[in-house]
Image 1 (spheres, one colour):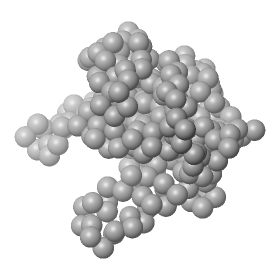
Image 2 (image 1 turned 135 degrees about the vertical axis):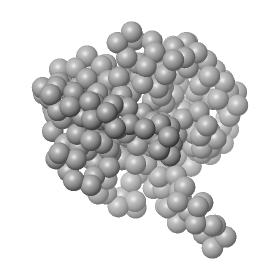
Image 3 (image 1 turned 180 degrees about the horizontal axis):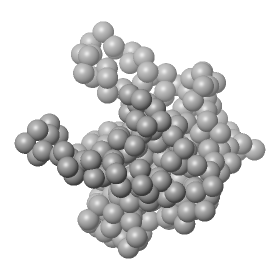
Length: 271
């Protein structure tokens, strides 16, 4: 059986935990406890190099904190999914670096392959549409990819493109209109379902006490609500832990949700 290694590039840590959770409820299992040496080649070496940074003596602490490692890994059979939090548009440089790293592993014409036999690689992008719409988001992504491997692979999202043995894909998170929106437009209705009073009261608390003059970074009401309701179950936990461990997201709701089904079906089509 062929081994497939897919790097899933998300914007933030919430995306990582959300994708990891819905995949674990749909046939994948967590691979986070595996040792780096037990991952298939050549990814084991890539992870080891990134984790150790061979020239670590020359790095400052800020650079060390920016080590590029997956936030979560899941596996189904011989399919390994490495899920990264890469940041938004302002962080496209590190997305381009990982694309370049994977592309360099694909043997060129008449080149002896360093890839083990029957090993396939892929880069899959999971990005928010925001207010841009799917078409503009895909156009921007095509431009980003073109700067590294000289192709513009996508006409829309949920496609699969094979570039000389490197699989490429893209999924754009949208809300109810299926064109604009973000991850929270999928996440919040799921978490709120069967917990309406808790979420409405959390929202009222935030509205009553929010003070624009006291914020220290961009305010996001949905993220703040997740933080408030999460404390009812996991005191002191971050939003990512609440998404991962709280029962606001359970297997019954995830398996019945149209958006989650759409995401899982797309990932399964890549495996």
